[in-house]
Length: 319
Image (tube, rainbow, N blue to C red; front, side, top):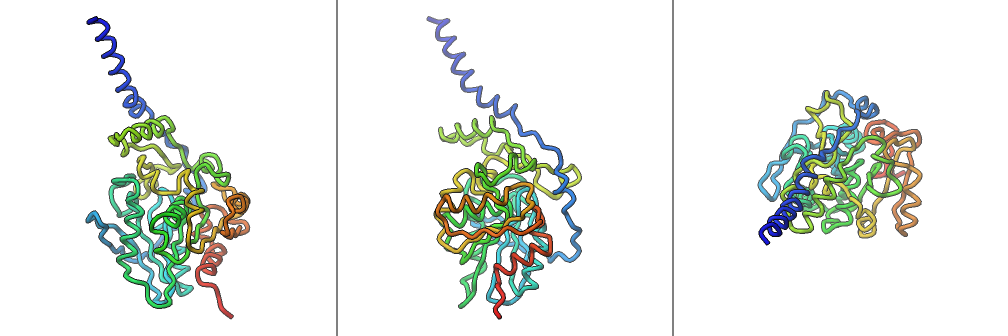
């Protein structure tokens, strides 16, 4: 009987330790630096001074403002890994078109919070709602647009189809990353590397109410060592689930209650441009898709041709 009890105790111990072993020894492997990303970072010499707002947990989060003093306001959500400064060219183009632009550093990036992690899934949604509250009530005739790029466009889908979806009047998604969708290339064209064993193990523990490992990194990005000082090279489990629509993207898309559009470059190396329109038709959604000729992924927030298209969607010209 004593040996049987020892055997059972050993089995229980092994079963309890197995998830820990999987998590500890299955860190995501950083993919080789993606050339198209490494070569698409212009030098910024005219960046506005950073500002800060207070989130509901008391944290001071960073953002940049490009005031134009009009009735058109756009909040820009940057893509994965990069900070708010990556949206500078787009913010400038919108400002030149008479649109006030705000660009927050999403918590876990740039000057907001600890790099690569958040406190709970849903915190980024709460942060954006707090930022909108700081802007105050919209003035009469003011139109507010949320513009997201890449993973930030995936998050824009999540936000638009979530409980805060009515905070903006319109949603513009630039080359959205939608995990599991037919629009996404494998590993986002080489941009991402995910540790599925770690993700699956942490998810299983979460279902049991155990959240001890939610801060462990599960996703790495194809950034060069030279870029590591300014970008977020990996995401924790909870940040990876919050910053995007995840595999629930269909549900979020179906629950969008405001006007929404998708813009994507024809030559995008991370998503498949011609798959977005069929996806919207299959879901029975009236979300227009515009494919911008010759544009790659990062071109959608930097190339003059793409910036002109984005600005025209947010502030169409009236003859």
